[in-house]
Image 1 (cartoon, one colour):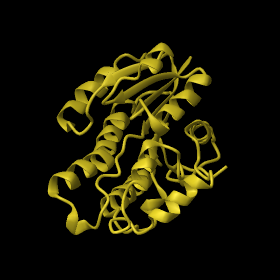
Image 2 (image 1 turned 180 degrees about the horizontal axis):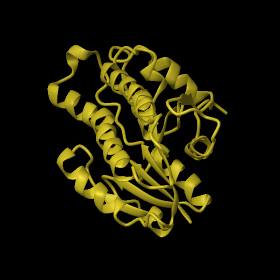
Image 3 (image 1 turned 60 degrees about the vertical axis):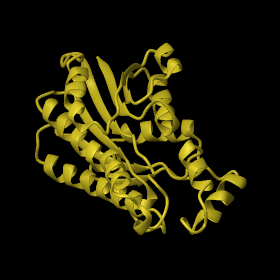
Image 4 (image 1 turned 90 degrees about the horizontal axis):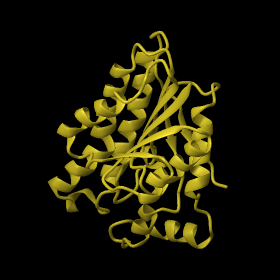
Length: 245
């Protein structure tokens, strides 16, 4: 029997750390990202190049990926909605409509669509099924300059909880978790540190975290997410956080 991971945004950052953890445990990985990572291909990851903001193309690509799997050979299948964007940093009045729409599409609409397709496709499979939504502490705390990011991640938490409620009485239903990876040493953090205080009032805190070596690394985060995915004691609908090292 085989275990399968389907992940969005796996070509870099937190996604690459998650993939490394699953690969090291013998999991077959499918990654959906805008860009292809040659190293992941060498490692045996099946990569699908797709701009996820092209919502009309998602269903065909995802169903095509699902169809590669044999329901009699899969013991567990996991969808990790990892792809996301900070969007433009700045107070809401400075944000244009296109930027707002694109950020909400990637952070919120895409996980809703993928989760819907996943639940429907695998509803009759006997394998274990889980959806992990990568959330953020910003879903629970408002930050000046992050209105779209905070709000879109808050929606992801509620998505996770409603999936859990809807699947609670379903035989062999889907388990849903939302996991905040903490402050991780990625390109997104570098982008935050390049912003200015007029647009993001908490910038000094994030600069200090980098200076003090307090950022989580992607490999450690990936390993802990793998462990949470395989921890049967965690209740579906849980909002979790990877603690700092």
